[in-house]
Length: 261
Length: 350
Image: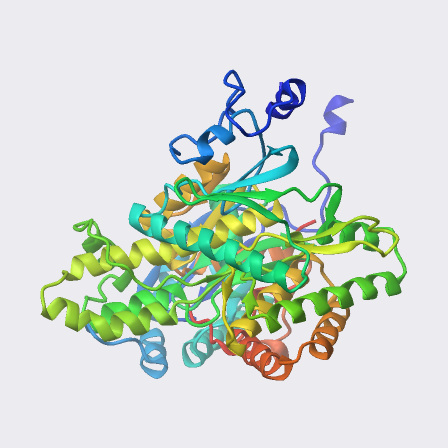
């Protein structure tokens, strides 16, 4: 049986009251911090590149725990530095986004010893990636998708105007909460694991470049759609013109590179 | 009856297709012959420069001109074939250095006309990928392509090898080569190999800039840092050349493994293949192996015979292209220094 079932049956939460809770096979082999007992009896949802995600409850609310476990391929001191820095930056960026009204998961709790962040679970959401794929597969009307990418552009503009650089913008890192098909869904940004605060147009330009490449490689033949996203970004951001200029520069760096060998 | 139903599908091609491949986009020149997935021969020469120096296009081209016919003869002799046995002549169309590419293309065009065989211009990066697939047996891997001129994370979808991540400035091999020049490490047999050997003698980690942006990486900051700091650190005895080699490898390879893992998570892939000259570094293979084991994924890697630029990889990609019906007309048999992996329509895969 899964850990989630156990939680539901006993009505327990992350608090250590459920001493007989089963520990998931991969959970926190070495962690020792305050988060350790909270993680008993939760279910591993996904292993991303950065972290493991667990699903469970935090004080009765649906929660996702993001655990940055040690990456054994990395040198231990490099690993510790990167992990700590990224945990701090992730929480900082989420808070800054939320203050400015951008939908992101709520941060419930952070444990810097085991590098765990307790986040609100976005219930009943689909990734923009899945939504785009299914909408294109079943031939949805182009206006629907245009409205979606325009909203994406608006939100990214707002985020960059707050000097938050996401660092890993992909269509998998954007969720649609609510009625995705009807077009009234709320766009939620997730996974700020590589984010940082920067006012430099260069950093924001690279942020858009990363999204462009992920977007076009994940959704082939959508150049026009991505163009609409950028137009909406440029129209909504107060500081867009140096950013778009940098984006053009960064694109050229890739194309012009001689790629010898 | 059962025998009939399992009989091979009739194809318009001869039972065996033999392709000869010419490669010389950088400082290696190679000629390889492939017959239906079997490498018959694959001789190669490398233009090696003194420590502290890189290879310049015109001098590299001169080197290639000097040895190309010898290498061609070796390829035919070792394969035990005559020109009449060849079905198609493949050559590297790009990307790479202009002068060496031209040199090799001229030879390919000439023999194709002498032997009256069709020509085929091949993308160098696709050559690496197809060779890797042939040698390792990986079916649909996420590909980390790392060499002196390229750093890309590639996955196949809808008839293209799509670039999910890449360097936004210099290639990882270029970063290693230029670091080797700064501290005057030998270029024989290659700077990367010598860095790898020196790194084995240290375990002291010096922190260097670490720059990952989503599935992209940047190496220019690390290079600037070591170019500026190396002599200070070495002069004051704060660390040794071996420590710098170790730390550089640990840092840049961690970045590469990280973006590969991110691309795998993004694409839902459970296979990784490393190709390109830097791909024969055993420490990189080891780190990638640890990452794969943690994800339950499989790693495919090749050794220096096929990782490093060679003629057989061009022959193998050419073989796939030729069998899918492609040829290059003489008037289109030019070369190009810039030729992105995702520009090629992959007509030989579903």
